[in-house]
Image (cartoon, rainbow, N blue to C red; front, side, top):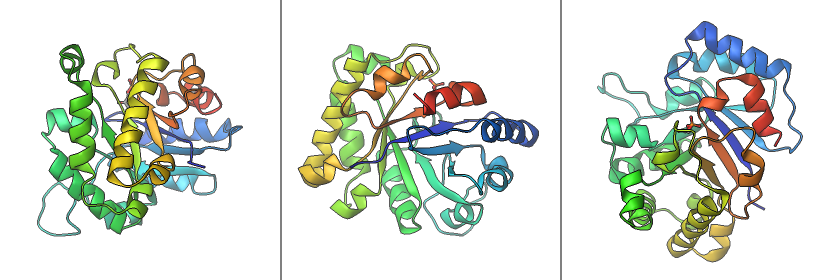
Length: 249
Ligand code: 13P
Protein backbone atom coordinates (compact mmCIF):
# COMPACT_ATOMS: atom_id res chain seq x y z
CA UNK A 1 0.00 0.00 0.00
CA UNK A 2 1.41 3.37 -0.92
CA UNK A 3 1.45 6.14 1.66
CA UNK A 4 -0.86 9.12 1.63
CA UNK A 5 1.12 12.27 2.34
CA UNK A 6 -0.20 15.81 2.66
CA UNK A 7 2.42 18.54 2.87
CA UNK A 8 2.13 22.27 3.40
CA UNK A 9 4.53 24.38 1.38
CA UNK A 10 4.78 27.71 3.20
CA UNK A 11 6.88 29.20 0.37
CA UNK A 12 8.49 32.57 1.24
CA UNK A 13 5.92 33.39 3.91
CA UNK A 14 6.25 33.49 7.71
CA UNK A 15 9.00 35.10 9.75
CA UNK A 16 9.92 33.27 12.97
CA UNK A 17 7.05 34.74 15.03
CA UNK A 18 4.49 34.01 12.33
CA UNK A 19 5.79 30.47 11.86
CA UNK A 20 5.62 29.79 15.58
CA UNK A 21 2.08 31.12 15.74
CA UNK A 22 1.03 28.97 12.78
CA UNK A 23 2.60 25.80 14.10
CA UNK A 24 1.21 26.40 17.61
CA UNK A 25 -2.32 26.82 16.18
CA UNK A 26 -1.79 23.69 14.13
CA UNK A 27 -0.63 21.71 17.11
CA UNK A 28 -3.41 22.94 19.40
CA UNK A 29 -6.17 21.69 17.10
CA UNK A 30 -4.25 18.81 15.50
CA UNK A 31 -6.22 15.72 14.56
CA UNK A 32 -5.26 13.18 11.96
CA UNK A 33 -8.34 11.10 11.40
CA UNK A 34 -7.11 9.48 8.19
CA UNK A 35 -3.76 8.50 9.80
CA UNK A 36 -1.81 9.96 6.90
CA UNK A 37 1.66 11.49 6.88
CA UNK A 38 1.48 15.22 7.52
CA UNK A 39 4.43 17.43 6.61
CA UNK A 40 5.08 21.16 6.98
CA UNK A 41 7.73 22.89 4.86
CA UNK A 42 8.58 26.30 6.34
CA UNK A 43 11.33 28.61 5.03
CA UNK A 44 14.89 27.67 6.04
CA UNK A 45 15.00 30.33 8.78
CA UNK A 46 12.02 28.75 10.57
CA UNK A 47 12.98 25.09 10.31
CA UNK A 48 14.60 24.71 13.69
CA UNK A 49 11.98 26.65 15.68
CA UNK A 50 9.15 24.79 13.95
CA UNK A 51 10.87 21.46 14.56
CA UNK A 52 11.12 22.20 18.28
CA UNK A 53 7.33 22.64 18.35
CA UNK A 54 6.44 19.51 16.37
CA UNK A 55 9.04 17.02 17.49
CA UNK A 56 6.68 15.49 20.08
CA UNK A 57 3.88 15.09 17.50
CA UNK A 58 3.58 13.01 14.34
CA UNK A 59 3.84 16.11 12.13
CA UNK A 60 6.99 15.87 10.03
CA UNK A 61 9.33 18.59 8.80
CA UNK A 62 10.36 19.33 5.24
CA UNK A 63 12.48 21.97 3.53
CA UNK A 64 11.63 23.73 0.28
CA UNK A 65 14.95 23.33 -1.49
CA UNK A 66 18.47 22.00 -1.03
CA UNK A 67 21.80 22.03 -2.84
CA UNK A 68 23.21 18.78 -4.22
CA UNK A 69 26.73 19.20 -2.87
CA UNK A 70 27.42 17.94 0.62
CA UNK A 71 29.58 20.88 1.72
CA UNK A 72 31.92 23.49 0.31
CA UNK A 73 32.25 27.02 -0.92
CA UNK A 74 28.71 27.48 -2.23
CA UNK A 75 27.68 30.78 -0.70
CA UNK A 76 24.01 30.97 0.12
CA UNK A 77 23.26 27.27 -0.36
CA UNK A 78 21.99 24.70 2.17
CA UNK A 79 23.25 21.13 2.31
CA UNK A 80 21.40 17.88 3.11
CA UNK A 81 23.25 17.37 6.38
CA UNK A 82 22.25 20.88 7.48
CA UNK A 83 18.63 19.98 6.79
CA UNK A 84 18.99 16.73 8.72
CA UNK A 85 20.54 18.55 11.65
CA UNK A 86 17.36 20.63 12.09
CA UNK A 87 15.00 17.66 11.84
CA UNK A 88 14.02 17.57 8.16
CA UNK A 89 12.66 14.29 6.84
CA UNK A 90 11.49 15.70 3.48
CA UNK A 91 12.70 18.21 0.92
CA UNK A 92 10.76 19.70 -1.98
CA UNK A 93 12.82 19.43 -5.15
CA UNK A 94 12.11 21.21 -8.43
CA UNK A 95 9.07 23.23 -7.46
CA UNK A 96 7.86 25.08 -10.55
CA UNK A 97 8.85 28.37 -8.91
CA UNK A 98 12.44 27.09 -8.70
CA UNK A 99 12.32 25.87 -12.29
CA UNK A 100 10.90 29.19 -13.49
CA UNK A 101 12.73 31.85 -11.42
CA UNK A 102 15.97 30.04 -10.65
CA UNK A 103 16.22 28.13 -13.93
CA UNK A 104 16.63 24.75 -12.26
CA UNK A 105 16.97 22.04 -14.91
CA UNK A 106 15.91 18.39 -14.82
CA UNK A 107 19.60 17.47 -14.72
CA UNK A 108 20.31 19.64 -11.67
CA UNK A 109 17.20 18.28 -9.97
CA UNK A 110 18.33 14.72 -10.66
CA UNK A 111 21.52 15.51 -8.73
CA UNK A 112 19.56 17.02 -5.86
CA UNK A 113 17.32 13.94 -5.61
CA UNK A 114 20.40 11.70 -5.62
CA UNK A 115 21.94 13.60 -2.70
CA UNK A 116 18.67 13.74 -0.74
CA UNK A 117 18.33 9.95 -1.00
CA UNK A 118 21.91 9.48 0.11
CA UNK A 119 21.04 11.37 3.31
CA UNK A 120 17.72 9.57 3.83
CA UNK A 121 15.71 12.69 3.19
CA UNK A 122 12.58 11.98 1.16
CA UNK A 123 12.55 14.17 -1.94
CA UNK A 124 9.18 15.49 -3.09
CA UNK A 125 9.93 15.89 -6.78
CA UNK A 126 7.62 18.40 -8.48
CA UNK A 127 6.56 18.18 -12.10
CA UNK A 128 3.87 19.96 -14.08
CA UNK A 129 3.13 21.84 -17.26
CA UNK A 130 2.56 25.55 -17.84
CA UNK A 131 -0.70 26.88 -19.26
CA UNK A 132 0.76 27.52 -22.72
CA UNK A 133 2.18 23.99 -22.81
CA UNK A 134 -1.22 22.52 -21.94
CA UNK A 135 -2.93 24.68 -24.54
CA UNK A 136 -0.40 23.62 -27.18
CA UNK A 137 -1.14 19.96 -26.40
CA UNK A 138 2.36 19.49 -24.96
CA UNK A 139 1.52 18.75 -21.31
CA UNK A 140 2.32 15.05 -21.51
CA UNK A 141 5.60 15.63 -23.40
CA UNK A 142 6.79 18.14 -20.80
CA UNK A 143 5.92 15.83 -17.92
CA UNK A 144 7.56 12.90 -19.67
CA UNK A 145 10.85 14.84 -19.92
CA UNK A 146 10.61 16.00 -16.29
CA UNK A 147 10.06 12.44 -15.08
CA UNK A 148 12.54 10.67 -17.37
CA UNK A 149 15.37 13.20 -17.01
CA UNK A 150 14.77 14.04 -13.36
CA UNK A 151 14.56 10.41 -12.32
CA UNK A 152 17.20 8.87 -14.57
CA UNK A 153 19.60 6.41 -12.97
CA UNK A 154 17.61 5.33 -9.91
CA UNK A 155 16.97 1.73 -8.91
CA UNK A 156 13.44 0.51 -8.24
CA UNK A 157 14.21 0.61 -4.52
CA UNK A 158 15.34 4.25 -4.78
CA UNK A 159 12.29 5.23 -6.82
CA UNK A 160 10.09 3.92 -4.02
CA UNK A 161 11.77 6.41 -1.66
CA UNK A 162 10.76 9.36 -3.85
CA UNK A 163 7.46 11.22 -3.68
CA UNK A 164 6.19 12.85 -6.87
CA UNK A 165 4.06 15.98 -6.81
CA UNK A 166 2.07 16.82 -9.92
CA UNK A 167 1.53 20.56 -9.85
CA UNK A 168 0.10 22.05 -13.05
CA UNK A 169 1.66 25.52 -13.08
CA UNK A 170 -1.61 27.12 -14.22
CA UNK A 171 -3.31 25.87 -11.05
CA UNK A 172 -0.75 27.23 -8.57
CA UNK A 173 -1.98 30.20 -6.57
CA UNK A 174 -4.63 30.93 -9.20
CA UNK A 175 -7.66 29.40 -7.51
CA UNK A 176 -7.99 27.27 -10.66
CA UNK A 177 -7.71 23.60 -9.69
CA UNK A 178 -7.27 20.86 -12.22
CA UNK A 179 -10.55 18.96 -12.23
CA UNK A 180 -10.28 15.64 -10.40
CA UNK A 181 -10.55 13.88 -13.78
CA UNK A 182 -7.83 16.05 -15.34
CA UNK A 183 -5.52 15.44 -12.38
CA UNK A 184 -6.26 11.70 -12.35
CA UNK A 185 -5.44 11.46 -16.08
CA UNK A 186 -1.97 12.96 -15.50
CA UNK A 187 -1.35 10.97 -12.31
CA UNK A 188 -2.12 7.72 -14.15
CA UNK A 189 0.19 8.84 -16.96
CA UNK A 190 2.99 9.58 -14.46
CA UNK A 191 2.51 6.18 -12.84
CA UNK A 192 2.83 4.61 -16.28
CA UNK A 193 6.10 6.49 -16.85
CA UNK A 194 7.38 5.34 -13.45
CA UNK A 195 6.63 1.76 -14.49
CA UNK A 196 8.80 2.23 -17.58
CA UNK A 197 11.66 3.39 -15.31
CA UNK A 198 11.20 0.36 -13.03
CA UNK A 199 8.28 -2.03 -13.16
CA UNK A 200 4.53 -1.93 -12.59
CA UNK A 201 4.70 -3.16 -9.01
CA UNK A 202 7.24 -0.48 -8.04
CA UNK A 203 5.20 2.25 -9.75
CA UNK A 204 2.13 1.16 -7.76
CA UNK A 205 4.02 1.86 -4.54
CA UNK A 206 5.08 5.43 -5.34
CA UNK A 207 3.13 8.27 -3.74
CA UNK A 208 1.97 10.89 -6.23
CA UNK A 209 0.63 14.09 -4.68
CA UNK A 210 -1.50 16.68 -6.42
CA UNK A 211 -0.77 20.39 -5.92
CA UNK A 212 -2.41 23.55 -7.22
CA UNK A 213 -5.15 25.44 -5.36
CA UNK A 214 -6.00 22.53 -3.07
CA UNK A 215 -8.59 23.78 -0.57
CA UNK A 216 -10.87 22.23 2.05
CA UNK A 217 -13.76 22.24 -0.44
CA UNK A 218 -12.01 20.41 -3.28
CA UNK A 219 -9.66 18.05 -1.44
CA UNK A 220 -12.14 15.21 -0.88
CA UNK A 221 -12.94 14.80 -4.55
CA UNK A 222 -9.28 15.02 -5.55
CA UNK A 223 -8.30 12.46 -2.93
CA UNK A 224 -10.99 10.05 -4.13
CA UNK A 225 -9.16 9.57 -7.43
CA UNK A 226 -7.34 6.24 -7.62
CA UNK A 227 -3.90 7.66 -8.47
CA UNK A 228 -3.95 10.75 -6.22
CA UNK A 229 -2.14 9.87 -3.01
CA UNK A 230 -1.92 13.18 -1.21
CA UNK A 231 -1.53 16.87 -1.72
CA UNK A 232 1.10 19.60 -1.77
CA UNK A 233 -0.71 22.63 -0.42
CA UNK A 234 0.45 26.22 -0.77
CA UNK A 235 -1.85 29.08 0.27
CA UNK A 236 -4.28 26.95 2.27
CA UNK A 237 -1.43 25.59 4.43
CA UNK A 238 -0.76 29.06 5.85
CA UNK A 239 -3.88 28.98 8.00
CA UNK A 240 -4.12 26.25 10.63
CA UNK A 241 -7.86 25.75 10.20
CA UNK A 242 -7.78 25.26 6.44
CA UNK A 243 -4.71 23.00 6.54
CA UNK A 244 -6.35 20.90 9.28
CA UNK A 245 -9.56 20.67 7.25
CA UNK A 246 -7.48 19.46 4.29
CA UNK A 247 -5.59 16.78 6.19
CA UNK A 248 -8.84 15.56 7.73
CA UNK A 249 -10.58 15.40 4.32
P1 13P B 1 -1.35 26.84 -3.98
O1 13P B 1 -1.98 25.77 -3.12
O2 13P B 1 -1.27 28.17 -3.29
O3 13P B 1 -2.00 26.91 -5.34
O4 13P B 1 0.17 26.41 -4.22
C1 13P B 1 0.45 25.12 -4.65
C2 13P B 1 1.91 24.90 -4.55
O5 13P B 1 2.68 25.47 -5.29
C3 13P B 1 2.38 23.98 -3.52
O6 13P B 1 3.72 23.67 -3.70
